[in-house]
Length: 459
Image (cartoon, rainbow, N blue to C red; front, side, top):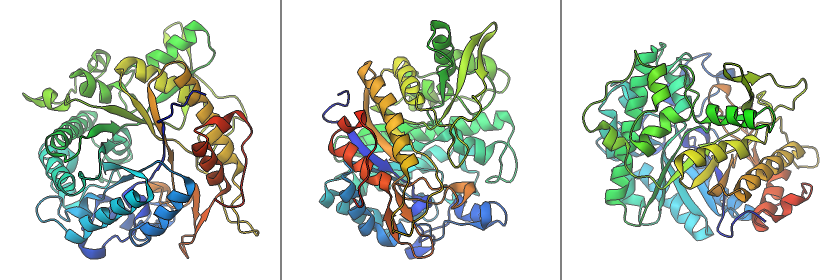
C-alpha cells in the first residue's frame, strides 16, 4: 500500500460557492456579488446569494464531514465578510462565523485548512483597482493579520491564494466579466506580479504572527499534460510542457511557481514575454520568495502530448473519450504525471488540494443519488496518485472537490461536483453513493482501491 499512515484525506469548498448569507450580519459585497447581479453573466442568472446556505447550516455540514470520516476540511474565508471594505473596520459577526466553524471542526476531530483568497475580492477594493493596484499586497497583508490573530491558535494549515491562473484568465483576461474589459497581456502580467507580491506579504504575516507553528502553501492550478505513450520521447514532451512556458496565456505552472520557490521568473517565460514584462521594484522578488512549506495543486484534466520534430505537440483525444458533465475528459493519468514533474522541479511536499468531477446527479425515487461514475472517477484518479507515491513523489494528502454541490461560477448551479447532493430549493443535503465509497477509502487509507468501487445505502 503506497499511501503513508499520516496521509491527509479531505474535501474542499470555497466561501462564495457554498456560504450564501451574501449580506448577512454586516458582510460587505465582493466582486462575485457584483458579477452575479449582472443579467446574463452567469447561466440562468444564478447567484451565490443563498448557495448552500452553509453560513446558517455549517453545524449540519460538519456533521456530514464527520460521518464521512474526513481528516481535514479545506475552506476559504470571504474577505469582505471579515473586512466589509477590504481594509479598516473588522466585522465581528463575520469573523465570529469562522471562529465557530473552526471550533465545530475541532470538536469533530477534523483539521481546518484555511484558504485566504478564493476569487472573491471585496468590491470596495476592486473599485480601487483590485489586483491592478500595487497596494493590494498591503491590503491582503492587513486582512491576513486579522484572520491570523483570531484563528491561528487553532489553525496551523494556511493556503494564501487559490488558482491564480483562473481568476487572472477569467477575471482579467479574455473573459473579462469581472473587469468589464479585457486587459492587455502586459496588464495581465502586472496583475499577476501583484498576486505574487500579495501571496508573499500574506506568507510573511502568517510566519511572523501565527500563534501555533504554521504550515504555509498556496494552491495554483496544476496545469497538466500526459504523454501520448510511455516512450522516453513522449515522457520528455510531457515534462517540458509541465515544467515550461510555451506561449502567452495563463495555462502553465512555472511562471507562477518559479518566483515563489526560486526567487525569479523562469527563463523561457521571460523570453516568451520579453516585451511585456511586469515592472519589478526593489524587494519584490525577495518578498515573493518567502519560504514555503508545501505546494497545493488543483488538477482535473490534461491534454495528451507527443514529441514532434519541433518539440512537444498536443495529440487529439480519441473519439468517444469519457467526459464529465462539463465536457472535461476523464484522464486519471494526470494525477501521476503532474505531481511527478512538479515534485521533480520544486522538491517540496505536495497536496492535491482539488480533484473531482461534475456530473448530472439527482435524487432517485428511492431517495438515493446513484453516482457510480463519480466513485469510478475517484478510484481511477487515486490509483494514479498512488502510483506517483509508490514512485517516490512526496505527496502528503488529497482533498476531493467538492464536499457539497455548489455554485460553479459562470456555470451557475448546473454542474454538480459534490459528494453530497444539495437541493437548491429546500437546501436538503443527501450524501451520494460516492460519499460512502470515499468514506471507505479514508477508513482503509486507500487499501480498498485495489477492488471495484462499492456503495452503501447511507454514510
